[in-house]
Image (tube, rainbow, N blue to C red; front, side, top):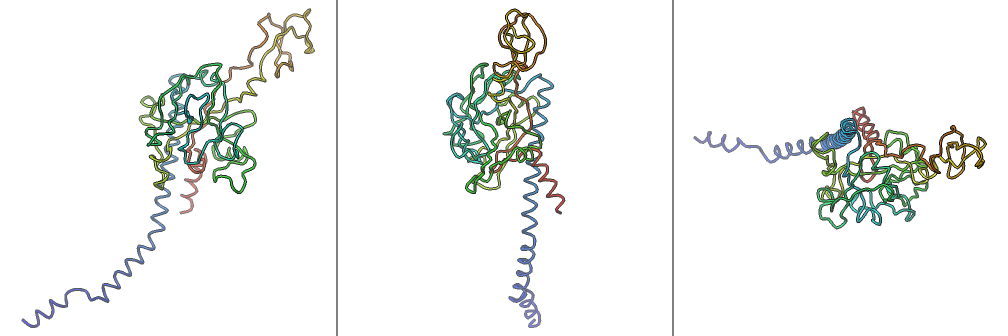
Length: 325
């Protein structure tokens, strides 16, 4: 009996043994933490690139099926889109006012004629609500029609050559840098690159995509409740200067480009009001005709995080992280 009781008392682990086991477990946990962090980061990047690709494909399918672009995008602008200001709940900070501020944010305010949107079927945009308590799921306060011939203030991607040391981390310095982010060549001299949010009200939801994806940030401060976590659709549009300076003029131009009322009307390709190219005699059709109908051209998708992340850049990051392991 005494032998049995002695064995029973010694059946458990000693304090030294328990300490050794705990130290081993702590060491193993320390070795695993970097791998777990890397796994979370890879999952985050993979999900992000998948969402960008899914929205990209949905917009292209919508164009094929419905012969135009989906309406009711989130405008990223507050108020009436004519006198409104930028949405203030974006991860990357405030949208630069037109011609003002340090001009170093990756989003700026541009003025465009509504026809570049209506010509491709974007007839309404959702107005953002800067006073909302939910930056992503209750981000809008209603929709407004887009009308041809009316100028609207909208958000566009910004290339800021300065990018000073105090610039936001997402400052984009050159067209080449923006091209690398988007995975698409850009020309910001002739074009603006509109950024429109793909929210749940977007016209393609329920048609070519079931739900508008949400990017879930890594930190609570950047969560969907606090910051806008929707994907952006990027559209290339000719800027107002380009639109104004391209057209046909027919003020009875001679083949040399000088005004001569004795000559038959000749259609000339114009820059501003100066004929630069003779493209043939025609009947009198008026003083001004556009060379081509200015339209918004879908380019790609992007994520408005602390730094702009485009589909091209996201895929490159994803594959780079895969190659690193």
